[in-house]
Image (cartoon, rainbow, N blue to C red; front, top):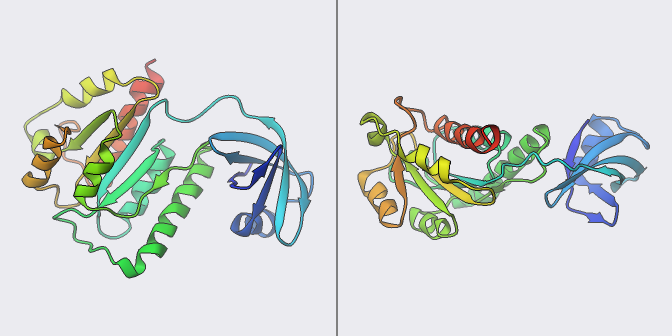
Length: 247
């Protein structure tokens, strides 16, 4: 059954417009009395289509879903801007794996230079990718996708998190394996953790030092060196295993 994230909700009805209305009517070809899932503000419900107009689809709640599929902890992924469509991949797959927030940042070794003229369209696309992935994976909440920030702004944003880790290639090369494990063992329901990953060329020693001075712990992600688009998925999987499958 198709799922939609809907901003406009009142009492026991969802009011679906624009692209989602088009998808329901023109792509899925749904009719009055057909059922869909609607989500809003962390809650999701099975709904029956009550009315279809030229402007909107009205769906009435049949039953609220009781079980939550959201991670018991809030996980944020900060990625040094990678080239090509790698960030889109990170957002799509990271959403499926339960990430709550994505924070792209401009790193010293980022090949891609952020173009402010194209900024709004880029961020709009990233949010659309997150929305579609959240609907596909039956999430109850939409991840937040930030516009790219500087590393100094990233440091400011990090102050609201309980735990802060930076994946550092040199730690992996030296066999570091205890930091990630120890932090994941401590994580409690309702807490938050921020992971920072470098772009293709990795983070510089200076960037890692800056983050450490601001309370970040550097860690390895196992004995192998992972690509910039693979490392966040490793981290999310590790968090999911520790907080959802072993407790």
